[in-house]
Length: 255
Image (cartoon, rainbow, N blue to C red; front, top):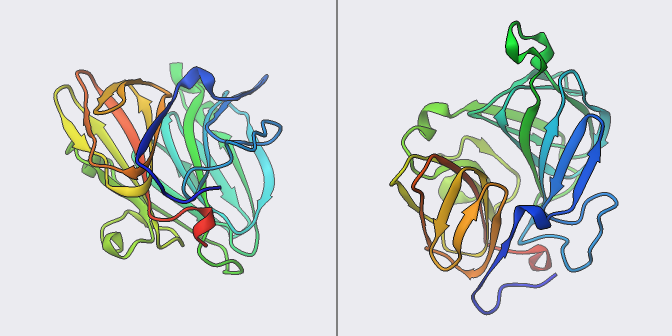
């Protein structure tokens, strides 16, 4: 677990990520997760999990506990039914920013909701990214929030999705309990350009399409780039693309 040092960019290809596969689930993990433990790949900055999940219709994660974790879920295709012990129940869909702060402890379940739909999509998988960061303080009560940002994403710029950083406090869709981290999203059309934020730690993950990243080259769906002590890199696409970017101003060793 290291703090920021010399500038560098590390590209992780989609096919190099560990994979969990069972009858109802295919999951790709950016960092050590479950049985996939690598002491050299436990996190980047304060990002502990960046799991890409595909869940078949009617299936999902049964009720299970979480504690002292900020969990952000971003749906790409389909719909996800969320239920928790705080009494929240709802559908998470593309363009909705959702955050659950597990705090002192919460139980929740997540299931593919497509079986409720009429027509050809009733058996479609749900495809989503789930990301975990540690809160600044433990022992807080659990909490939940969600906000629709689909209209903001149509602008083709970086949109603050989740943050506890003071500079995004009034601009992020949902607040997380970490004052050093922010998640941004962008939906880009051909020819559009955004720039990676400058921070000690940045994680760029292409969730749809392909991008050209200054200093890293082509990044395709499922690829990521881990930036240390750098930023400002230009992201350009010649096709439709979607990207998630974590801006982080400390690492786990900075606590």
